Length: 423
Image (cartoon, rainbow, N blue to C red):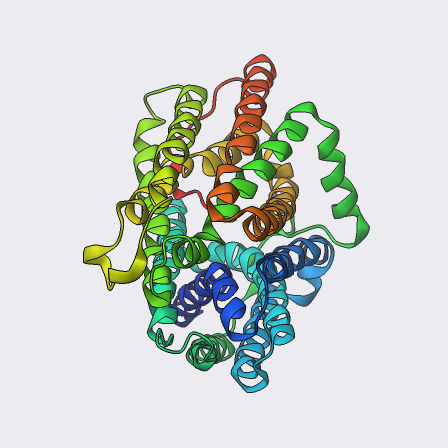
């Protein structure tokens, strides 16, 4: 079996979906100007993305092995290619909602299929771990690249213009390239044992939700939900904050949001080292406290920003650089708690637990973006980001209970692979 085309297609898959999934903040900003949408209405885009991920996860748990991993990836890539082409042609807000719904559903298919396919195209455990790390890293590269790709298509002199939607022709081209590469290379899925496939019918769903009655899983689900609520409320609304509150030009607002993605990637790298030496609960609580401190001390700097003379990175206000550094501090939380819960469960339950992670992470992202959008519209951007202090406090409480359950019943966790985490 020729594997280089499959590997290349997988990398392009993740690159495309990293750009599309994390462009929601950029698009939220753009639709307000281009289509005259208010902030609370624009927040629905996050729900379109995340709820479709959650909904498709039910399908994935039941029927994906019947369709086949290669066919599922082809369906996902074809769907994204078509909707990307339609976006600049139809050029309406409802098409934007359809685009994110299609992207979310397709990503649910891609993620599970890619993870399963990696086992077929790698020779041993070392190569498997290496490819997983490369894929997760490439996802972060996609996020960073996306901010600059979108900003290149934006006309600061005409904010109401819809020419920025032409970026989707480029993304459609990448999706078609990945589709053709995958179509031209067969994948021998019969090499994968039955135990590695997802259970079919309603049995997989039933077993998955039976997990939620376990106390440690209940606390984990609450922790994951709250974390993603915090992360997405900031990530999705940072470009709008930069533009509406800090008065940065639209393209610069999007470019400077890349600091959040970069600081998150660096934070997870550092966490992989730090968590080998220190207690995870101590590290994560310190991270949350540092995040809260950054909110308290950085946001007041935005109060009297005058955007008249801001033309680029060199004369952007300090808060535009400081606040996105919150990504560095919140970065270790999600992969750490995922590692803990998976290590606490038998290996045969890891697939079902992964389904719960996807579903409740999606629900948390939707909730955070919708709440932030309504607060942003009613009380302003500063108040909207101050809101993050409430879920931060709740997350500390959840983590304390999580630690007690983990220590009492499940023993210690090895964090040697933690730095590969992400969502």
